[in-house]
Length: 351
Ligand code: IPM
Ligand code: MN
Image 1 (cartoon, protein in one colour):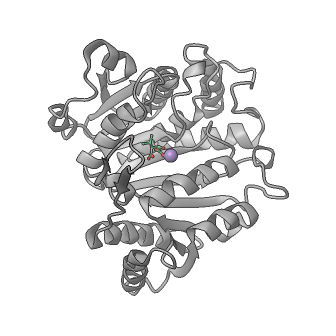
Image 2 (cartoon, helix red, strand yellow):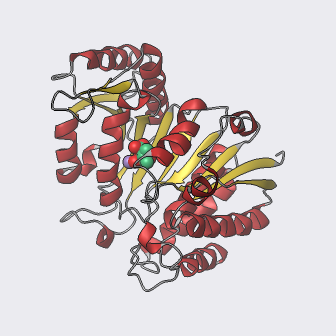
Image 3 (cartoon, rainbow, N blue to C red):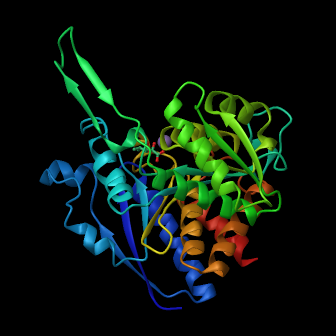
């Protein structure tokens, strides 16, 4: 395999700490499995913005296109206007590089980590395919008469046939390779009639995948079923906005934000991997943040880069450490230092 070029945006808050650990794990796995890579670091963060007034310059996009993947820590800081950095950096990378899939595996490794009564690893094992470039996120939005009693705001929910179809197709492809071969479309086509586009596209593309069982749930009900009967879900495909919300429910039932990872994917092009959690500014520099989610994101990145052996080593280490109880708490009160989580994963991987 040729040498891979990996961009790193450590970002804000606990981002640099958890990314530091993910890079340490990556180095360990690379040595064990023979993975050749180089790192290119980018400074985009609140500190960088406050010093330079620069969020992320568009000029860097062409440089990103030469990378194989990007690993991102977390972006967001209360010293900066709400959402400015998130939209410019996370959004900028996702949207401008057309990373049209947000892939969010939701897998529980130990029943004690699940807040749901009587649910265990056999019940929580699903993958969410969140459309990642459209919907309410396309920023066709505005204010009129801002700050007056007559204020009007808009935020358009835009979906295109192309955007919906490529998400739906990706999800069918994923579902057909999983043992259960079940795909659930989650939408709100009863109240938002434009979502009929999802209904029709799902049915049409589904015709090409007779082996995949089709299911459907409205987003409100899906949130309920996730909590009541998570075992009903295998692969789910969902609009960007609804996917943002329901995958946070997913993160909780798999053991919390300490373990939940995601990939922003454009097959065949540079793609970005990140933990689902945010920057948690109050824990910055304290060495208590759990790096497991970022390490899991690095595992997803290796899988995307075609280094299956390295991806499996990371996945297995996390699965073994969590299912055996060697790592029993992923919160900031675990008693483990950030680096100690990685130490345990390395020990498990080496044994
Ligand atoms: C996520 C985050 C982002 C989103 C924010 C930070 C822009 O919540 O990755 O889920 O809304 O997609
Ligand atoms: Mn979110």
